[in-house]
Length: 132
Image (cartoon, rainbow, N blue to C red; front, side):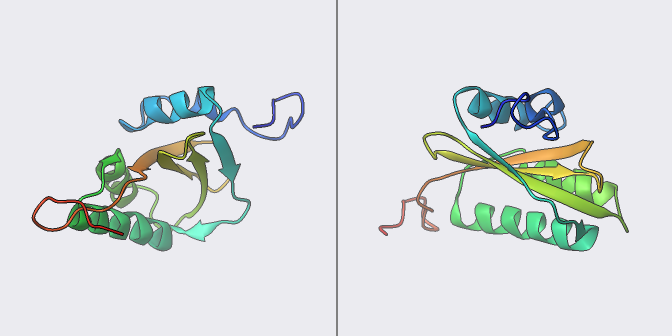
């Protein structure tokens, strides 16, 4: 990850990760040990960002993936920021064990929510892990 001196236009994501959701602490920890932060320039309509987060939550629950803050993120996006454009970003843990999604306002200056999904094999309906 570039330091602030190398890329002054990049916001300090670690400082922005407060307590929006229960995933924030784990996302800060991932950055601290070398996780890669990617911020996307484009904006997307609220309905699209909310729909993707809600679908990710339903699918994760259905196949048994471990998530953190995803349910909170869906509620934050459901309750606020309708009819707005949103920006997103990602944090990939250095060991690739977790994938975090960041949700920002249209300007990219306010972090609205953060969710994480563990990189693991999905489980079958009977609680056993699928063989891939």
